[in-house]
Image (cartoon, rainbow, N blue to C red; front, side, top):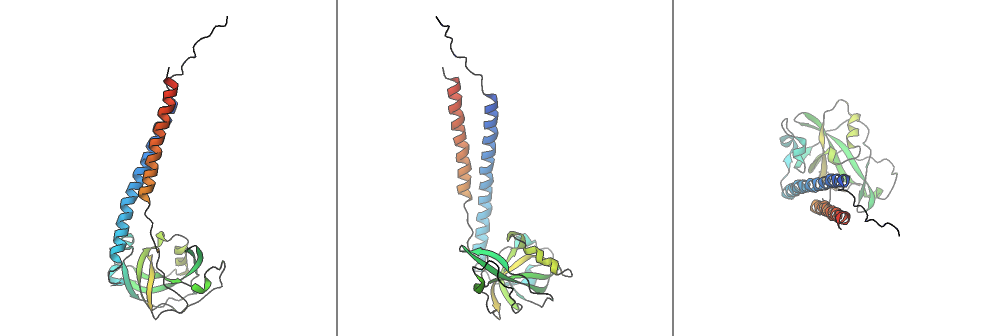
Length: 229
């Protein structure tokens, strides 16, 4: 007659418990970070909404020695541009409404605080939409521009690389997204960016917290299977 012995139970899963605790902490941390991003994004959206109807201020009053460029985002300004010697700047690649677009940019000579130049994003060139490698285009230089300021770092790409073309200048770390120009340039349609700013951080936070709760249920189920009689 065979000797049948009860199966020995495994010990408490220390390794699994530690791994679960670490993963749970990471997921909760990601959820909390998304909640912080939510509050920040709500503040940005409220600022943009308030600035939509704000009158344009002279750039020289806004861009002072004490002004922090990141605090000037979406401030509406006006400026009279001086000429900057040099070759026309290259077009900037972008995607808008699912289509390839090209944006015109130009330097604008100013005297504002510690800076003597600002980069102007003049808008879309509709004739080049959908082209992968458009031919070079040149436009008359900007004169009077009304638009909103955006820190150049928020636009991505290689925008700041154009500053290397102007070694004798002190460019502001901002881009003036043109809303209107006088005189209006031929072949350019003003299109300040972004058209819409998504705010899905609450959705992301709930996802991370949901994954954390799911992890606890999975851990509890595995633990119960190991310790049940």
